[in-house]
Amino acid sequence: MKQKLEIKICGLSTNESIDAVIEGGATHMGLIFFEKSPRHVSVDQAQNLSNYAGNRIMKVAVNVNADDIYLEQIVEAMKPDMLQLHGNETVSRVEELKARYCLPAMKAFAISEISDFEKVKPYIGVADKLLFDAKPPKGSNLPGGNGVAFDWEIMDVLPKDVSYMLSGGLDASNICEAVKQSGASAVDISSGVESSAGVKDIKLIEKFLATCHGCDVVSER
Image (cartoon, rainbow, N blue to C red):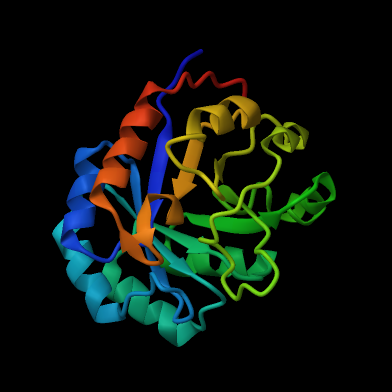
């Protein structure tokens, strides 16, 4: 059965990029709260960007091991539709944050081989959605947004009913093949639509989204 691809464009920081993402038909936008990232936004910036987007798109607050005080500031300012936990958050931490904020949570994992899925199992049924990204290259201090991919075909080991987003090294040139090989029905991109680190390229956003809409997405999950 063919279905529409869920598409999240992450690391936005301008109104112009938000417009391009929404007008191009993405389903989710992500704001990143991680100071080491070139895509990091302040709480004040996030409030302005979130207000600008309004209810036109699902808004995801991406954080890496944020403490309670910081998370409170993020949620209050951005009023996200979903939390993305991109650090080493435990199962109990995911459960705690979901209950506290009454928000769905997406837990991210770094993947390079089949054995990496063992650490995922305890989160199935706890996190509302999983996100699979490639392991960072040596020397990188960023958990995501590194522009590297992993072997998409190993996604076959996942139970068919697991809801996830595929990330890592995606761009307009490979997105349809990534969807075909992995069986993913949701994808996430950041560096693949940038002209330089942290700088979103409107034309690349438009090209990526147009390509996504042309992919044959057949869900067997």
